[in-house]
Every structure is written in structure tokens, then in C-alpha cells.
Length: 486
Image 1: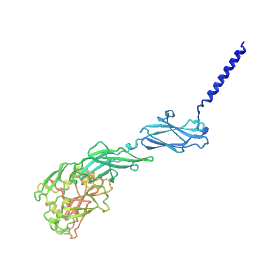
Image 2: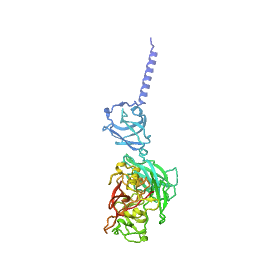
Image 3: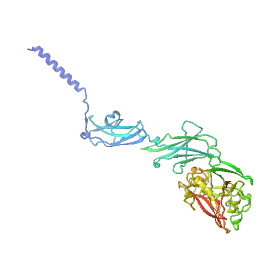
Image 4: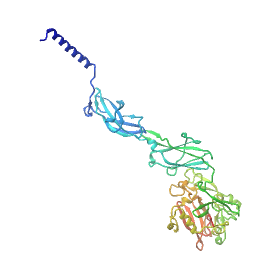
């Protein structure tokens, strides 16, 4: 049996425990419970977009409830809500927020929880996004450099999506491992794959960088770029500087000519300049069995004056700077004799050969053409569409520009793989009348063969566009000459 005194002690202990329990309860908040979005409203229309190579933009609509307070954002590498363990930020703003300083080319999961005014949270909504190192994946490829006289040409393989980027160019003098810093303002030409850097000093080394700029989200981002070094140098740009040329001297006048080996043939790599006399273009009468020599545009009979004669040639690119010349706004003054050589009628072409050389036959021209990739069936055709090998024969400068990719005037620096180095010297218009006249300079080259077609015509070749045309030329025509070694 409990005594009165013992009962009193038991009651006192119970009261103390109750009071302690009450005070403890009052001093500690209850943990907020996770609720479904439907209980008090979650965010909606959650979206993600990349704004930089390692940054994302999250956007959403906040719930339209009175007890909404803010949104908490968690993230982590992975794909499930359990991976989103890192707290990023909390915001009450309606709209979105940047997620910065992420790792490029990595998959992330984002968990967004709505928190009400009492601290209750939703279980949240997740979204997955993979960052992409856009800037460095947008670099051009296969960057190459072609040194030239006082300039260099940069060539590359462009990106497939040309609408979503632009290129910037930088250079410094000297070979250095650091990025060049001097920006160049240059037009990109020939299908976004070539640029000419002008006004450089020969024999001085330069380093160049081509960088890609693209809009990612809201910002313009620039890649690290691709670097290359080059040294411009003095050279004869009509010839292919990557090939080895021979030379011979014409004992008759001391003129020195470059020669080129193509297959088993040795060709002159320049038009003949032998000029024992000169005639105006109107002098064609009776020239079927007489030699006539012409210099393009010259309408006199003095050899010294003919050799100094110049013409303003419109629409021709002589310096490879990529400007559109076809509207004729650009004019270059050209010494026709030095640049294009002499135009010969048939009789002169057959008889002006220096010792050890001869005018090539139609068969020898076909051998050349097939050596450069023309099929035998195309080589036997008369006319055009005989295989697109004109670029292999044409010089890298001196031709009119065009947007047609297989033509001579598109990307000049892909020309002249053979070393033949043809220039568009035009012609003296044929026939025995006194009308004469010159034409086609700047866009067409004509060459005689030694093969007769009919009483008053011989086969010839015309290089224009993408074609090497086999045609018939009147004996009185004035065409260029390339001899072949015996």
C-alpha cells in the first residue's frame, strides 16, 4: 500500500515530466512535410535552354496561390531526382534563373520544389539537360595556309550550318604559342571557305587564328579558335609555286620561258612572246599562207610600241583579295605583251617554233587532257562538255570571278594543279575581212593545234568556265601558242 507521502512524490514527478515535455515541444519547429503539387500548387511550364557552353537558363511559371512563397532549386549530375542533391538557390521571382559554372558536355538533373508560406514543400518537378561545349565544337576544320607575294590565303572546311555562326580572324607577327590578338576585318569568300590576308611583309613569319562566334541563348560566344603560321614570299603567282618548273631560252630574242612536265610531255608554261613583226587587227587579208603577229589591243605596226601596249582589263582578279569584279568596277592596267604573249595566225603558229619545240597536234592535246583526268570518250568530242578540267590548266590569278564552283573563277587557289598556268589572253577575231578586232580578254584562253580540219580551219582549244573546248578556228584567227618539246 502506497503512503500519502509516496503518492505526493509520484504526482510531482508526473507534473515535472509533463511540463518538460511541453517546454521542449514549444521550443522545436515541426519538420515541414513534402506534399504533392496539387495540395497547394506547384510550378508549371518548366523549360531549360543553354545560354553559354557551361550555363543554362531555367524558366517556369509560379503557382497562382495565396500561400506560395518561393521555389528551391537543386541539381546534380545524373538523370533522377535522387541525383539532384546540391542546393543552388531559392527565388520568388516569376520567370527563371541562370544556372552557371557547370561542366560542359555533362548531363544534369534539376529539381524545383515549391515552398509555401508555412514552409511546406512540394515533392518537386525535375528536368534533364546536357550542357554542350558549343564554342569549341563550332570550330572550323582542315585549316590550311597558302603563302603568296605580300599576303597569305587561309582555306578551311566550313561548318555545315552556315547560318548560325560567323568567323573572326586574328594575327600577330612572329611564331608564338599564344593566341594572336590583332583582329582583321576581312571578307570571307568562295562559299565561306577562304580568306585573303593582304598587306603583309615578305619573308616575315606570322601566326593566324580563325575563331568561330555563335549566338548561344542570349550571348555571343567565341571559340578558342584554330591557329596556323605562315610566311609570305616573293614569287611569280601565275605559276604554281608548289611545282618544280624547268626553263629554256629562245636564242632568237633571248626570251626565257618556264616549262612544265605533265605526264610524259614537256610543255611551255608561258605563252610564246616571239614578235618579229606586228600588225593591226584589221590586217588579216591574205594571211592564210602568210604569218601575222598581233598584240592584244594594239592597232599599229611598231614592235617596240606593241611590247609596251597596255589595256584596262575589267572584272579580273589579279591580287586574289576576293572582291567581286564582275560588275566591272575594278580595272587593272595590264601590259598585254608581257602578260599574255603574242597572238598568232595559223601560218605564224606553225612556223614560229624555237629549235627543239613544235606546235602540238590535236592528238597531243588529247594526251594532255586525258593525263589530267578527261576520259577518252570526252577527249574525242568536238565542242564543250568534255570533262571539267579547266581549273587544272588555268593560273591562280588573272581570271574573272564567278560563283560557279567548278569554274576557273571560283576559288582560284584550287587552280593550276598541272602547272600549265593558262591565262585568258583573248583572241584576234578571225576571217580575212578588214574588220578584225580583239575580244575575250580576261575570261577565255585560245590555243592552236597543228591539226588541220578543213581548207581554212585548224583545230584549236578554248579554256573557259569549267571546260576545255575543242573547236575549229579560221586560219586567220589570232590565238595564243604553247609549244611542246620534241
